[in-house]
Image (cartoon, rainbow, N blue to C red; front, top):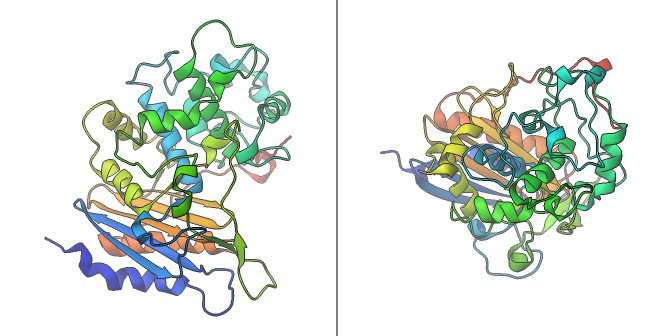
Length: 382
């Protein structure tokens, strides 16, 4: 059997060139943590300088980082799980978005044609026709439901769902609050964005992380604050990286499902091990479903981007970048957690991650091929 520890030089070949020297560079990082899994075995590596925002004495595999848009795979897993787990309002990927909105909200369809109904799986595959967002003056970590309401009232799609792929935080923000409503609804009719729409963080820590034994993965990271990595940001014209504070989440934000989770190498490798070999039970069934192709040539599962025999996802926040990928056939999986944003550090991390996966599985990991709309149809915030 191949010894996973023997791949240290391969990892270094692709990751060490990303580490900055004595001055800041746009495509470099101050530090990067790497986790590998192969046939269930694990290996951890640390490159550059990865310190803590506060605290000390934490092993690299237990340092908490912010995984940004990798959060979306967890949100999409909740959608898939609804096919198997009993929810207060029965839903599936084919449930219309309009069916879960409060009576005060309305969604517009392309050409006002009900044949172009937007469904939950369209939100989960970036094929709803929504813009990148989130739209308005707020970030997704502090996104009021009033801003969501304004967006829905003003936005008119330029094409029908499942026609093109446009990455959308706006779609995932909406998906998260609708899933919360479906899972936690009690009775009556919701005329406003009531508390049933606010529960997405609790769904993650009830239905996914404990079942997969991921105790250091969460939205509210106050309990692990002394394990959080110090983040850095590149700024053009500055010779040194700027310190970046960990994000402050509003737990009543309507945008959390788009990217508010934090985790460790240990937990994220656990997540990938369970993607490579889904566990028995409903959650395993849901994980399997997230990996099935959805839509017409979208190169998407639910949350996962589908490549040539592998699945991947990346994410970024101010001060933090991340990438995860796995090949279920070869059983290789990897997680990269960078502590630097700005410039092209995130893109460089993703590219290196794909190249590293290709080297490990001995087959190039090609980028997914997404059907982008023509410029005149690219969705924009209203």
